[in-house]
Length: 246
Figure (tube, rainbow, N blue to C red):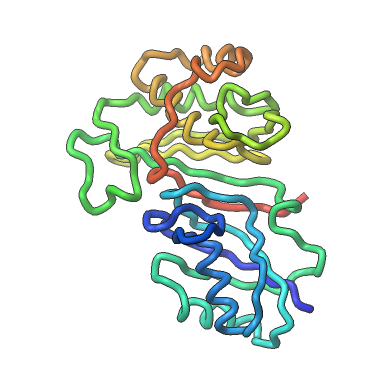
């Protein structure tokens, strides 16, 4: 039996998140349907992690097992003919039988995109979060550095988190401005439910001058959700990259 690893890009706007669920349009279910159409097999597609409704991906990773002998280079082409245009299979590779997209994941990189203009955007409204008050990206970039390292992020998770531990390690983080866009990018060994969106909301408070950059350290230590910023909307969030290196 072959184990196939897929790299997937999707626009989350029209989907009720990654996870398969009855009577609701979801990304996992759509790809599993396409796989069944081209292989004749019902499969379980295992992702590196779930994304919520409205969240996008540039490099989601998922794997499935199949007895099909379709050449590996033909799999993306075949699947893309069966999928909505808002889901694209970017690449497919045959991997070791024991490879598991979620359990073997070492690092993930997320990006949050803020349109920091007064009037926002019509064309990209489902791909960016519009925040019209002027933000200072330089102090936001100073603040994000305080998230780097191993911390208990209990104060940066939404209720309903199923993870037993709220300890995570952040390897890098940066905030940059490109015209009206403020780009927040953060890499870690894992993220709690809504953690990136709460970090981004907290950084907005920093950018407004309501929180000083060095106050992030104490906010993390307090482990109190009410001390961090609000949870920003899903449309600005992207899963950019998933790494499996040691």
